[in-house]
Image (tube, rainbow, N blue to C red; front, side, top):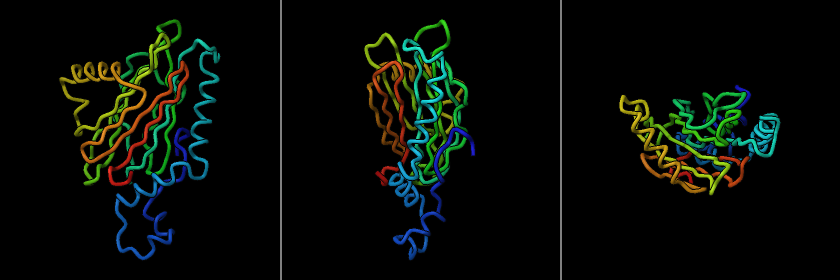
Amino acid sequence: MGSNVFGTPVTTATLRTMPEYQGKNSITQQDRAKVALEKVNAEGKAVDARNSVEKLQARFGGGGDDVVSTMCLIYNATGDTMTYVIARDWKGRVCESAYPVIIANGQWGAFLHGQYYNQEKMSRVGIVYSALNNQGKEQHWFMGFSNNYSGPTNQVYTEIRKPGHYEQVESVGIWQALGDKVSNGKLVNQANEEGGYISGSIGNTAKPIFEVIMTLPEAK
């Protein structure tokens, strides 16, 4: 298990130990998603994930008030494992620890994204993960944010598309359009499409938390 994922995975075996599932013949992805969503703060894992990125942020850029960085937390409640696909840094870069490659169902992934030294005071990125939708089909889930020190507000945008969408030959145009959508976003954004549900939010400060929860429409 990587140092940037937190919590015990919620698996079929986890559900078998719970009274309400002991008599059930088959445990579904939807069942695992629902339980993962219920256990979003179990075992103190949400606190552990946040503490981890707060430590990264305290070290980053000497911790100065005018240094822009974003504490990123992603929770997987899709009922199955999610896997990192691709990211595009518009401004800044991921710091110290990389994007979590694999986040199991019921786990938080955590990382810090911050400005480049002596460059624009912005942290702005789009990240794509692969996860199964409510039909058990792979989809690519996009999450992006803009943390802009000069304001007026930070922004978030999320969406779900078919596999390969973000890696197409014409993806330059796709990513340019995504950049515009992030720039025109608000502090909170949800997408309920392609059999999945993704919710993102960001605080309106120079050192905010960007939080994403991925799940299935039925589990909410």
